[in-house]
Image (tube, rainbow, N blue to C red; front, side, top):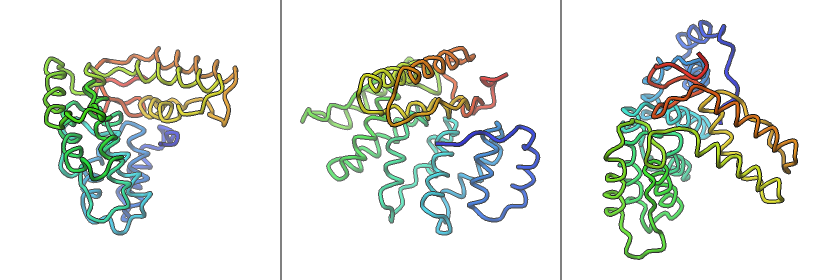
Length: 264
Protein backbone atom coordinates (compact mmCIF):
# COMPACT_ATOMS: atom_id res chain seq x y z
CA UNK A 1 0.00 0.00 0.00
CA UNK A 2 2.81 2.39 0.97
CA UNK A 3 6.47 2.27 0.00
CA UNK A 4 9.45 2.36 2.37
CA UNK A 5 9.80 5.33 4.70
CA UNK A 6 12.28 8.07 3.85
CA UNK A 7 15.38 8.45 5.99
CA UNK A 8 14.64 10.25 9.25
CA UNK A 9 17.28 12.82 8.33
CA UNK A 10 14.94 13.97 5.56
CA UNK A 11 12.22 15.16 7.95
CA UNK A 12 13.28 18.81 7.95
CA UNK A 13 13.62 18.75 4.18
CA UNK A 14 10.13 17.29 3.80
CA UNK A 15 8.68 19.99 6.05
CA UNK A 16 10.40 22.70 4.02
CA UNK A 17 9.13 21.16 0.79
CA UNK A 18 5.63 20.98 2.27
CA UNK A 19 5.71 24.67 3.14
CA UNK A 20 6.73 25.51 -0.44
CA UNK A 21 4.38 23.08 -2.20
CA UNK A 22 1.32 24.38 -4.03
CA UNK A 23 0.21 21.30 -5.96
CA UNK A 24 -2.22 18.98 -4.12
CA UNK A 25 -0.53 15.97 -5.73
CA UNK A 26 2.87 17.09 -4.41
CA UNK A 27 1.42 17.66 -0.95
CA UNK A 28 -0.05 14.15 -0.91
CA UNK A 29 3.35 12.62 -1.68
CA UNK A 30 5.01 14.78 0.98
CA UNK A 31 2.22 13.97 3.45
CA UNK A 32 2.89 10.26 3.01
CA UNK A 33 6.60 10.76 3.70
CA UNK A 34 5.95 12.89 6.77
CA UNK A 35 3.45 10.40 8.21
CA UNK A 36 5.90 7.54 7.68
CA UNK A 37 8.34 9.45 9.86
CA UNK A 38 5.69 10.01 12.53
CA UNK A 39 4.83 13.63 11.72
CA UNK A 40 1.04 13.87 11.47
CA UNK A 41 0.84 17.67 11.63
CA UNK A 42 -0.34 17.99 8.01
CA UNK A 43 -3.14 15.44 8.37
CA UNK A 44 -5.84 18.06 8.97
CA UNK A 45 -4.92 19.98 5.82
CA UNK A 46 -4.91 16.78 3.78
CA UNK A 47 -8.38 15.94 5.11
CA UNK A 48 -9.55 19.37 3.98
CA UNK A 49 -8.01 18.69 0.57
CA UNK A 50 -9.77 15.34 0.27
CA UNK A 51 -13.18 16.74 1.17
CA UNK A 52 -12.77 19.82 -1.04
CA UNK A 53 -12.29 20.29 -4.76
CA UNK A 54 -10.20 17.33 -5.95
CA UNK A 55 -10.80 17.87 -9.66
CA UNK A 56 -7.08 18.50 -10.20
CA UNK A 57 -6.18 15.07 -8.81
CA UNK A 58 -5.91 11.93 -10.87
CA UNK A 59 -7.99 8.97 -9.68
CA UNK A 60 -4.95 7.15 -8.24
CA UNK A 61 -3.82 10.29 -6.42
CA UNK A 62 -7.20 10.67 -4.76
CA UNK A 63 -7.19 7.01 -3.74
CA UNK A 64 -3.67 7.38 -2.34
CA UNK A 65 -4.84 10.35 -0.30
CA UNK A 66 -7.85 8.43 0.99
CA UNK A 67 -5.66 5.44 1.90
CA UNK A 68 -3.31 7.71 3.85
CA UNK A 69 -6.15 9.41 5.72
CA UNK A 70 -7.74 6.08 6.64
CA UNK A 71 -4.45 4.50 7.74
CA UNK A 72 -3.47 7.45 9.95
CA UNK A 73 -6.91 8.54 11.20
CA UNK A 74 -7.44 8.92 14.93
CA UNK A 75 -10.78 7.81 16.33
CA UNK A 76 -12.07 11.40 16.14
CA UNK A 77 -11.00 11.75 12.51
CA UNK A 78 -12.41 8.33 11.67
CA UNK A 79 -15.93 9.63 12.31
CA UNK A 80 -15.40 13.01 10.62
CA UNK A 81 -17.98 13.62 7.89
CA UNK A 82 -15.20 14.87 5.62
CA UNK A 83 -13.57 11.44 5.53
CA UNK A 84 -16.73 9.58 4.52
CA UNK A 85 -17.54 11.84 1.59
CA UNK A 86 -19.56 9.87 -0.96
CA UNK A 87 -19.02 11.58 -4.33
CA UNK A 88 -21.85 11.84 -6.82
CA UNK A 89 -19.59 10.96 -9.74
CA UNK A 90 -17.30 8.03 -9.01
CA UNK A 91 -16.41 4.78 -10.75
CA UNK A 92 -17.01 2.92 -7.49
CA UNK A 93 -13.41 3.10 -6.23
CA UNK A 94 -14.13 5.52 -3.39
CA UNK A 95 -17.20 3.60 -2.25
CA UNK A 96 -15.25 0.35 -2.19
CA UNK A 97 -12.28 1.86 -0.34
CA UNK A 98 -14.51 3.36 2.34
CA UNK A 99 -16.67 0.28 2.72
CA UNK A 100 -13.64 -2.01 3.03
CA UNK A 101 -11.64 0.23 5.35
CA UNK A 102 -12.35 -1.48 8.67
CA UNK A 103 -8.98 -3.12 9.15
CA UNK A 104 -7.15 0.10 8.36
CA UNK A 105 -9.44 2.46 10.28
CA UNK A 106 -9.77 0.24 13.40
CA UNK A 107 -11.76 2.93 15.26
CA UNK A 108 -14.64 1.48 17.28
CA UNK A 109 -16.78 4.57 16.62
CA UNK A 110 -16.56 3.93 12.87
CA UNK A 111 -19.05 1.07 13.09
CA UNK A 112 -21.78 3.66 12.57
CA UNK A 113 -20.22 4.54 9.20
CA UNK A 114 -20.33 0.95 8.02
CA UNK A 115 -23.96 0.75 9.10
CA UNK A 116 -24.66 3.87 7.02
CA UNK A 117 -22.93 2.35 3.99
CA UNK A 118 -24.81 -0.92 4.43
CA UNK A 119 -28.12 0.94 4.58
CA UNK A 120 -27.36 3.04 1.50
CA UNK A 121 -26.31 0.10 -0.61
CA UNK A 122 -28.54 -2.70 0.67
CA UNK A 123 -29.83 -4.41 -2.50
CA UNK A 124 -28.27 -1.65 -4.63
CA UNK A 125 -24.56 -2.36 -4.63
CA UNK A 126 -23.87 -5.88 -3.39
CA UNK A 127 -20.07 -5.63 -3.31
CA UNK A 128 -20.07 -2.44 -1.26
CA UNK A 129 -22.68 -3.91 1.10
CA UNK A 130 -20.57 -7.01 1.70
CA UNK A 131 -17.41 -4.95 2.26
CA UNK A 132 -19.20 -2.67 4.73
CA UNK A 133 -20.55 -5.60 6.73
CA UNK A 134 -17.10 -7.25 6.64
CA UNK A 135 -15.62 -4.03 8.05
CA UNK A 136 -18.20 -3.97 10.82
CA UNK A 137 -17.35 -7.59 11.60
CA UNK A 138 -13.63 -6.82 11.73
CA UNK A 139 -14.28 -4.13 14.32
CA UNK A 140 -17.04 -5.74 16.39
CA UNK A 141 -16.76 -9.48 15.76
CA UNK A 142 -20.46 -9.52 14.82
CA UNK A 143 -21.23 -11.05 11.44
CA UNK A 144 -24.09 -10.03 9.19
CA UNK A 145 -25.70 -13.21 7.85
CA UNK A 146 -26.14 -12.48 4.16
CA UNK A 147 -28.04 -15.72 3.67
CA UNK A 148 -30.62 -15.13 6.39
CA UNK A 149 -33.58 -13.28 4.91
CA UNK A 150 -34.54 -12.19 8.40
CA UNK A 151 -31.24 -10.35 8.97
CA UNK A 152 -31.57 -6.58 9.09
CA UNK A 153 -29.07 -3.76 9.26
CA UNK A 154 -30.84 -2.37 12.34
CA UNK A 155 -30.43 -5.66 14.21
CA UNK A 156 -26.78 -5.90 13.15
CA UNK A 157 -26.15 -2.36 14.41
CA UNK A 158 -27.63 -3.22 17.81
CA UNK A 159 -25.57 -6.41 18.08
CA UNK A 160 -22.35 -4.54 17.27
CA UNK A 161 -23.11 -1.90 19.88
CA UNK A 162 -23.68 -4.63 22.48
CA UNK A 163 -20.48 -6.45 21.49
CA UNK A 164 -18.39 -3.31 21.98
CA UNK A 165 -20.24 -1.92 24.99
CA UNK A 166 -17.69 -3.18 27.51
CA UNK A 167 -14.59 -2.51 25.39
CA UNK A 168 -12.84 0.63 26.58
CA UNK A 169 -10.25 0.84 23.80
CA UNK A 170 -10.59 3.38 21.00
CA UNK A 171 -9.17 0.96 18.42
CA UNK A 172 -10.64 -2.51 18.21
CA UNK A 173 -10.50 -5.73 16.27
CA UNK A 174 -13.08 -8.52 16.40
CA UNK A 175 -14.74 -7.09 19.49
CA UNK A 176 -11.62 -6.53 21.62
CA UNK A 177 -8.84 -3.99 22.03
CA UNK A 178 -6.77 -4.08 18.84
CA UNK A 179 -3.68 -6.25 18.62
CA UNK A 180 -2.06 -7.60 15.40
CA UNK A 181 -2.20 -11.24 16.49
CA UNK A 182 -5.18 -12.28 14.37
CA UNK A 183 -3.79 -10.73 11.19
CA UNK A 184 -0.37 -12.30 11.79
CA UNK A 185 -2.07 -15.68 12.25
CA UNK A 186 -4.05 -15.13 9.05
CA UNK A 187 -0.85 -14.24 7.19
CA UNK A 188 0.93 -17.42 8.26
CA UNK A 189 -2.10 -19.55 7.44
CA UNK A 190 -2.25 -17.98 3.99
CA UNK A 191 1.44 -18.64 3.42
CA UNK A 192 1.00 -22.28 4.42
CA UNK A 193 -1.98 -22.72 2.08
CA UNK A 194 -0.05 -21.17 -0.80
CA UNK A 195 2.97 -23.41 -0.07
CA UNK A 196 0.63 -26.42 -0.24
CA UNK A 197 -0.41 -25.44 -3.77
CA UNK A 198 -3.22 -23.01 -3.05
CA UNK A 199 -3.54 -19.51 -4.49
CA UNK A 200 -1.33 -16.69 -3.20
CA UNK A 201 -3.95 -14.54 -1.45
CA UNK A 202 -2.14 -13.23 1.62
CA UNK A 203 -0.68 -10.02 0.16
CA UNK A 204 -3.32 -7.74 1.81
CA UNK A 205 -2.42 -9.07 5.27
CA UNK A 206 1.31 -8.64 4.57
CA UNK A 207 0.81 -5.07 3.33
CA UNK A 208 -1.40 -4.20 6.30
CA UNK A 209 1.21 -5.43 8.77
CA UNK A 210 3.92 -3.50 6.92
CA UNK A 211 1.78 -0.36 7.09
CA UNK A 212 1.23 -0.76 10.83
CA UNK A 213 4.89 -1.43 11.60
CA UNK A 214 6.94 0.13 8.82
CA UNK A 215 8.76 -3.19 8.48
CA UNK A 216 8.67 -4.40 4.89
CA UNK A 217 7.42 -7.93 4.36
CA UNK A 218 9.36 -10.63 2.47
CA UNK A 219 9.01 -10.79 -1.29
CA UNK A 220 5.78 -12.40 -2.48
CA UNK A 221 6.20 -14.32 -5.72
CA UNK A 222 3.68 -16.19 -7.88
CA UNK A 223 4.46 -19.42 -6.02
CA UNK A 224 5.46 -20.10 -2.41
CA UNK A 225 8.21 -22.54 -1.42
CA UNK A 226 9.89 -23.66 1.82
CA UNK A 227 12.25 -20.67 1.86
CA UNK A 228 9.27 -18.33 1.65
CA UNK A 229 7.53 -20.12 4.51
CA UNK A 230 10.64 -19.72 6.65
CA UNK A 231 11.01 -16.06 5.68
CA UNK A 232 7.44 -15.24 6.67
CA UNK A 233 7.73 -17.20 9.91
CA UNK A 234 10.80 -15.10 10.79
CA UNK A 235 8.92 -11.95 9.78
CA UNK A 236 6.03 -12.88 12.08
CA UNK A 237 8.44 -13.45 14.97
CA UNK A 238 9.99 -10.04 14.32
CA UNK A 239 6.55 -8.39 14.39
CA UNK A 240 5.46 -10.17 17.55
CA UNK A 241 8.65 -9.05 19.31
CA UNK A 242 7.66 -5.39 18.92
CA UNK A 243 6.24 -3.57 22.00
CA UNK A 244 2.61 -3.48 20.86
CA UNK A 245 0.12 -1.89 23.28
CA UNK A 246 -3.38 -3.29 23.04
CA UNK A 247 -5.92 -0.80 21.75
CA UNK A 248 -3.34 1.47 20.08
CA UNK A 249 -3.30 2.16 16.34
CA UNK A 250 0.03 2.45 14.56
CA UNK A 251 1.24 3.77 11.21
CA UNK A 252 4.79 2.79 10.25
CA UNK A 253 5.42 2.04 13.91
CA UNK A 254 4.14 5.42 15.13
CA UNK A 255 1.16 5.78 17.47
CA UNK A 256 -1.35 7.88 15.51
CA UNK A 257 -2.29 9.58 18.79
CA UNK A 258 1.36 10.51 19.44
CA UNK A 259 2.04 7.98 22.19
CA UNK A 260 5.10 5.69 22.34
CA UNK A 261 5.79 3.90 19.07
CA UNK A 262 6.97 0.43 18.18
CA UNK A 263 10.56 1.35 17.44
CA UNK A 264 11.59 3.41 20.45
